[in-house]
Image (cartoon, rainbow over all chains, first blue to last red; front, side):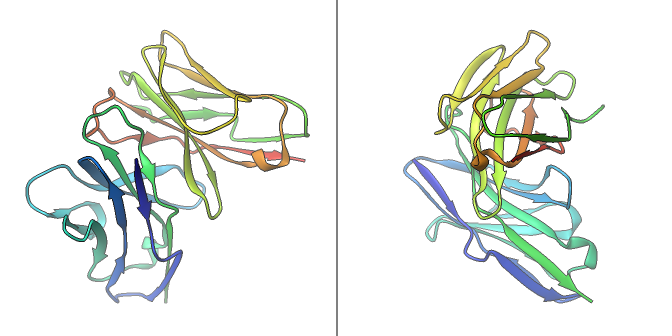
Amino acid sequence: AQSVTQLDSQVPVFEEAPVELRCNYSSSVSVYLFWYVQYPNQGLQLLLKYLSGSTLVKGINGFEAEFNKSQTSFHLRKPSVHISDTAEYFCAVRSTSGTYKYIFGTGTRLKVLA
Amino acid sequence: KAGVTQTPRYLIKTRGQQVTLSCSPISGHRSVSWYQQTPGQGLQFLFEYFSETQRNKGNFPGRFSGRQFSNSRSEMNVSTLELGDSALYLCASSADTSSYNEQFFGPGTRLTVL
């Protein structure tokens, strides 16, 4: 079985400041890792994913995430946030075998302040 | 390509009624998944369909059911509605069931049970 923990339910940050959204996972099998973003009144869209290779993954809108196998973490970072980054961010895992469902974290609401 | 569409966008029902939600995936996508999103719970997986067959099922009571048609469109049904069924129901499609494929989400159907 797999589980995903997003430690912060809300993160307020000032515009142009850096931000890190934390994600830890637990799994007895190999997993792929994903970050999705949900803007108000919209569905989720993919920010980035880690499948294999370099542990630093770059995504859309200037976001990046680093896979740390020993700490079972996949934290999302952005060096300078904008007001438009205000949204809810979800970390997700899925078994590499393909027979298991996506497991999503409970989400982190990022609030960018002017 | 048109995105994932869900109808209706908003729905108000009373306890004991039943409801059917519809999802049209991106053209060419054959896998459709359904999620229930509630504040604090994040996304809870309901079920996944591929080529008209249910591949995975989440931990929801039998009141929740779904199906997929030959054109990949999917419906989910909730019978004997309860107050706790109030949520945003999201549909997501992907090309196939490969674990590394991202899911493309629709805007959701917001169900309110009174």
